[in-house]
Length: 336
Image (cartoon, rainbow, N blue to C red; front, side):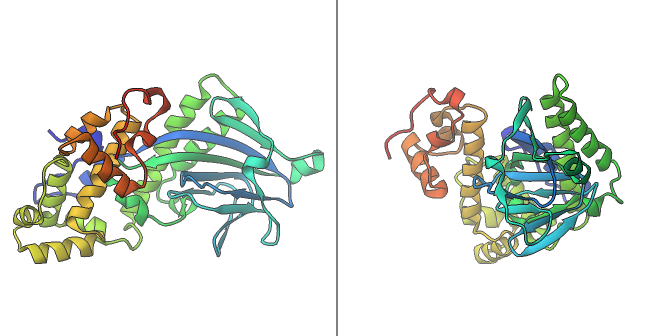
């Protein structure tokens, strides 16, 4: 049985289908650490989202228009439009291109309920009539064992372009905005579940529409021979993998396998194994509360110290740094 902690399962038969692949992608997807803001602002306005932690960001315009700027790219969002920025990053919501931005964290917000706050800069009835209304969310966007897909997603995923194909998304967006506005009991829980469905719908639409131009990862999962290797790695991430063994599973020479693997996924086979292990380690330690010793054993490291060295080399931090506060006292990271 494939380890469910990885949130990922691949069909290894020749008859693998895109439908099954998308199902497994969405089953492994999780949003956590969600926080929402209901924003009412009157022109001229400019809001800056720093998002230094690289959390995903989501914006839904319930009354527009508003200009989204990401780097040198600009796009107008109209009433009913929504965008998902899967990797987060600096971006601005503006009433016009020449307006200066103010950091969202510096704007007074009134807590409505757990994880939801209200921002209102309107000072008089005229402001309120001209106001732009936004519903924004910030979250950790986790695809489990398919986490490499996030780096291949577009900087901005525009929901407006999907509404004709998936009209069911709009009522869910409106329900999210309504829940945040009405301050009802349990709103945070309802918002969290609606956000899961909306994000899953956006990602599904992106996959079904061809995954933009990322080709390689998707092609690798649909290539029966290469798919068998990836499935085996995810099924047993703690196995002592060698390039020769992986090449044998694909039925090719080491050089041909290594070249094809890197061309498809942009990383060497052993580099991919290491990335997957560290991704799983972060999940198991930070979310599941497993001890560092347990994780080191699951991932095939001979000692806790060897695992900690590999983790720091790959991620730049110690395993203990990713532990959730409620489990931080479970064990200590060994000296490296």
